[in-house]
Image (cartoon, rainbow, N blue to C red):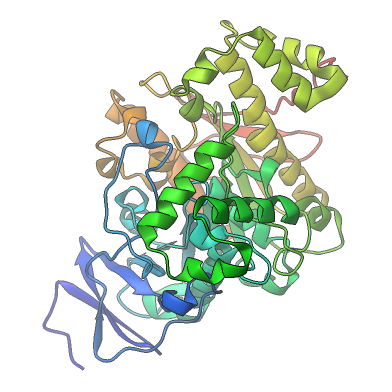
Length: 500
């Protein structure tokens, strides 16, 4: 079929058929390409199946529904969105500066949202500017969320379905991205929060070696990576109970409306919520089949991995959650002491003192936020970088310190618009309200160029930032992104303080 006279459109031919996208200021944008079949009806709660071929052109010029979900817990920080939802959601978006086959580096974005909200197709994650500025192919994927993606009921649902969706999506990219100008042998996975945790989970699977070449983990929830099978199954039974379904009648979950499933999911989240904890009911489960090993076992073992790593966190990850949590804001000394006792046992007092000394105003929210930022995100990320270094693998670490003008500090998700360099897509984000656009652009240029350079060759250094050294256990060099961009040595509470 000849499309040469339709200059505003781009076309790519893959084995499924022809894909029609839009040409947006020199970047070909393809939206909502299906990589899997709709997992609906009897297929609900089943592992994903590859997409089927289509007849004629597939219209990838428009968005299609995102995964069914409740309102994001971080809407008060990131802003809200209201988009059509449907189980027919297993699609991906591609932005490429080439309209024909080629060998540009490829980045695949795996969105966060605690495995319960978000979508790769949200405007926030538009890869147009990264593709245009960096001459790189960007891909962002949608996957199943909440109970539909992470329910675990052995004999009915094996769990980790959303992660299996991600794997199928990356395999689709590996197979087809050449036709969109990308190099299938130079794929970098970028994941934030649950997306970063997903990449960490994929690293535990030897059968996936070679699927991607590099990984960038932003604020990955490595400190709480997997749920144990018995806990996950218990959560599945609690979900059934809310829906008034017996274990023997779990098959009825395939017939219940999405509205009822989401309502039950929300009820379960409220019932299971614990003070200062942010992990939702449905999560990655170390099921012994798909996910067999802990990440530490993989990193300590003999596997070569052959992955380049760039990893980091924001300075105050938990601020996005705690700023709007009245119970945390009003917590007294007894609550803080109890939570520190739960985490550190007989060392609780010395750890609490170490965290309090770091704060000019040591409120409960600040101290708990710093401690859980370290426990869930920062310290595990540093340990992961150290493991990579010990294996003689490329390992770079960053920390995002820039402070939100909206009193949210350097909160969870704050670095994302800087990486994508697409401030125009974040018009209603409270965490960015009042920023200096000139300052944003300066930090964003530095970060995006570093991420792109890393995707090209495994080295984030470029002419517009100070020298960024590899992370080693000896030097512990971390690049800090703020109004001042500079490397510093990582400080690890508990190792660098006299707290043991």
